[in-house]
Image (cartoon, rainbow, N blue to C red; front, side, top):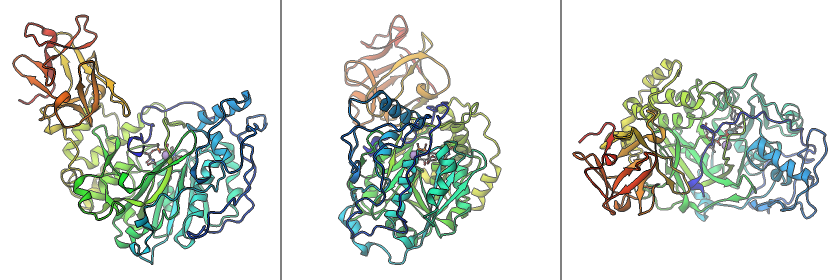
Amino acid sequence: LNGNVIIGAGGGLRNELEEADIPPTAAKPKINESGRQSADKKPRKKAAPIPLKPKLQDDTKKVIDPPGNFDENLGEMGKPVTLPKEMTDEMKKAVETGWTNNAFNQYVSDLISVHRTLPDPRDAWCKDSAHYLSNLPATDVIICFHNEAWTVLLRTVHSVLDRSPEHLIGRIILVDDYSDMPHLKTQLEDYFAAYPKVQIIRGKKREGLIRARLLGAQHAKSPVLTYLDSHCECTEGWLEPLLDRIARNSTTVVCPVIDVISDDTLEYHYRDSSGVNVGGFDWNLQFSWHAVPEREKKRHNSTAEPVYSPTMAGGLFSIDREYFNRLGTYDSGFDIWGGENLELSFKTWMCGGTLEIVPCSHVGHIFRKRSPYKWRSGVNVLRKNSVRLAEVWMDEYSQYYYHRIGNDKGDWGDVSDRKKLREDLQCKSFKWYLDNIYPELFIPGDAVAHGEISNIASGMCLDGQEKREEAATVSVYQCHGQGGNQYWMLSKVGEIRRDDYCLDYAGKEVILYSCHGGKGNQFWTYRENTKQLHHGTSGKCLSISEKKDQLLMEECSQSLTRQEWLLESYDS
Ligand code: UD2
Ligand code: MN
C-alpha cells in the first residue's frame, strides 16, 4: 500500500471550497494526561470517556445519532470502522460534510477514542534496547495545522503523549496556521490546559505550512525538533529509534516509516521492515516512493536498520535543532504547500548531512486524495516553490524541470540569500548528489531525445497521463508546447518514457505502464531516415488515424506520412 500512495494531492487538485462551519466537539477527557503508557503495561483500556455520539454537529447544534450497533471499542487496535449501508438522511449528511471539509471520513474519526490503541508494527530487532543509546536527547514536537478536524488533531497529540517516554518530550508545539473552524479558535486552549507540555501558537495570518513550521521552530528549546502532520498517530516505540540516530550524529536527519491510516475507515495499515520504501523524485519535482535499492541493502545485516533515502516525504521527521539552523531551515519564500521536502532533502545531502528512513519507527498518517483547504488564488504556489528550489539547488539540471513545465517559470521572487547560504555552507553540486545519492534517477540529458513527439503530417503530439495504480491509454492531442503530458524521453535502451512509466504495446492499445527494463513490449526504435517509430515485439509502427484524432499501431509503410514523427532535441 505504502508504495503506491500519492503524497499530497495538493498540486493541481486544490479546492476553493469554503470550509463549512463546524461547531466544536463537546466532551473533554477527565483524566490528567501527564505522560506515557509504558511499553510493558497492557494498553490502557479507555483513558478518556469518549461519548458514543459523533460530535460532528451541524449549525443547528443537533447531534446526529450513530447507528445502534456501535460500541465504544470502535477503531481500537487500529481496526477499521465501517459505517452501515443503511443510514438516516441526517447521518448521511453528516458523513458527507465530514468528507467535504477534510477529505477524509471525519464522522468515523469522531466515533473513535482519541486515545485509541494501535498494533505494534515493529520488527523484533527493534525491541532490543542494545540497538539504542541509553542517553537520548529530548525533542520538541511541532504540529502545524490549518483547519484540522478536532478528534484527528487530538488523537495526533495524544498519540505522542501516550506513546513517548515522558522525559524525551520537551514540548508539543501546536501551530495554528490561521484556522477559522470555530473549535480550533476557541476550544484548544481549554482542552490542553490540563497538559502542561502542550503549547499553542497562533499565526496572525495564513502562512502556509512552511512558514508555520518555522514559527514553531522559533518557540522550540529542546535539542531536537520533530515535525508531524496534524493527522498522524504515533505507535509504541516510535521516538527512541529516531533520537538514537541523531544522538550518534547530529547531521543525520531521520524519518519514521509512514504507515497508512485509511481516509475512509481509519484502519491502521503497516508492513514489516522488508516492505520499507525510500524517497525519490521525478523531473516534475514530485516526490515518489521506491524500493530500497540493492546497493543500499548490501550495507545492512537487517532490514530493520536505518536506510539512506535520497529524499523525504516531508511531513514527518526529526532533526537536530542546531543543524536545522545551520542548514538555513526552510526557504521562507515557500508558500502554503510543496517543495520544502525536496529542499531539505537536497541540502541535507549536498551540505554534508545524511537522510535516513528508520524502519523501527512507525507513525501513521491519513493520506488524502485532494487538498481540503484553500490555497492562494491567482498564483501557482507549487510551481513557484519548485522554481525557487530548482534555481538554488539544482544547477544545470534545473533545465529538465523547466522543460517539463514548458519553460513557463512565472515569478519566483528573489532567491539571492538562499544562493548565498548554499555558498557559505560550501555545499556539493547537484551532479554529485545525483551520482552518489540517487544514481537510479533517469536523467533526461542521457536520453536520445526528450520533449515533444510530434506527428509531422498533423501537428498532433503524443499525449498521455500516467496513472499510478492502473495502465493509462496514450493518445494524441494538439501540440501545446507546455511539456506536461506531452513530455517524453527516448532512452538509450529504446524506451519511450516519462519518469518511471513507459510506452507499452501488447497488441491492443498503446498504454503507459511501469518501466520494466526488459525491452519486449516497451522497446521502440526511431528510424531516423523514415522518421518512423518502430515497435519491437509487434514489428508495427506508431501511427495516427486518418481523421488525425487517434493513435494507431499499423504495419510499417514508408508511403504513409502519418507514420512520421519528429522527436524534440533528438541527438543521433
Ligand atoms: C506532504 C507531507 C506534508 C508536506 C507536503 C509538502 C507527509 C505525510 N506529508 O503532504 O507534511 O511536506 O507534502 O509540502 O509527508 N498546513 C498548514 N497550513 C497550510 C497548509 C497545510 O498548517 O496552509 C498543515 C496541514 O494541516 C498538515 C500539514 O500542514 O498538518 C501538511 O499538509 P497536508 O497534510 O495537506 O499535506 P500532505 O500530507 O498532503
Ligand atoms: Mn498530511
